[in-house]
Length: 285
Picture (cartoon, rainbow, N blue to C red):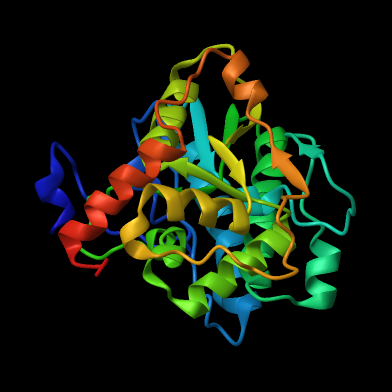
């Protein structure tokens, strides 16, 4: 397997929807990182393609953790999608770990990508209920839009989204606008900082609960101005008409920082590395 070439890994074949298929991989482990979820933004049936499998996957992995009798802590990758999508109005709002996405609103209005947003929210809430009922030490990491260099041959969709203003991809630019309108901001974090946060919280004995992992809060127009100035060769447009120039909220990483974590990458470093990676892949021309 391609993944096996990345280092000292033992690869198992398993299926999130197949109860018991994670028993062998988890047996004997002290720490378990659950970082995957079914994603299909083109799905015509989000309930069966994303929401139910995400919920079932969390339950199956946690059941395997209970069976192992060796797992001391589980670290679940959630998403900002589980925090900031709501009907609150105004500006200057601060979202923290107490906030949850409004699932009833999403299921009623069904905005673009609603299935993914609901799946991440339902999966995390399912994990918390199971953890409480079964006395599992659970930590959830709540990352934002991630970008930066990738180890995979295929370019992750998040990088395509993060670089849409540079590539001029109208579909993805509209997706970014939709993200801002639905979630309240464009929040970005370097993938390495997200990975470091997972390991940091796994090893931090005092850690507990949810942790937002967000390095930068911005908006589409603000991001466009930054990119236009830093990378003038791409001629990034900065006129967005009456589209809101300011984000209505920010995602706060105060809890994570107070645990002793620090972000290694700001907006400049995040995009410098992303642009270098994309140039090497021939994505930016």
